[in-house]
Length: 134
Figure 1 (cartoon, rainbow, N blue to C red):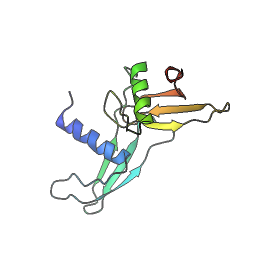
Figure 2 (cartoon, one colour):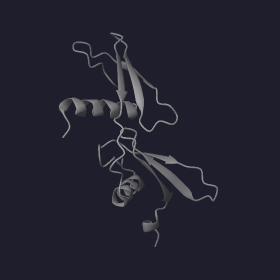
Figure 3 (cartoon, rainbow, N blue to C red):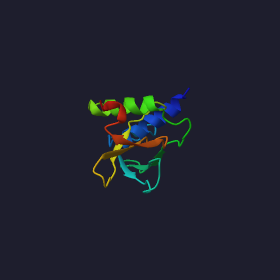
Figure 4 (cartoon, rainbow, N blue to C red):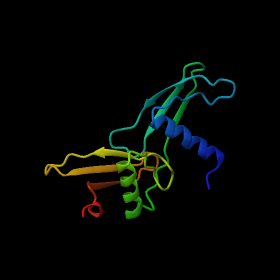
């Protein structure tokens, strides 16, 4: 069960991930924040730094890396189906929007990496998935 503070931190993370407008959380400020992605290329969890344009306060926004339990086949299939329907799939463990990354494949078959940048869970899948062929 998440605390109110954990829910708020997750909400702000999702806003930063989706490039939504963030406002300063300091009491009495509420100024607009400039968000910069500090994530290194190999990181599984995204890290942002948000600076308030009004009070110059700085907030570090980052995910909470957790790899267990991993996604099961049913969850991966559900995320793929939602993606096909142009809905936003979310991580079944923390409700963070999933990012689909197209991977290079020399045999010209579609291959994707599904990533949750909050918990760091990810998997690679061929497209279409074997269950969809028939």
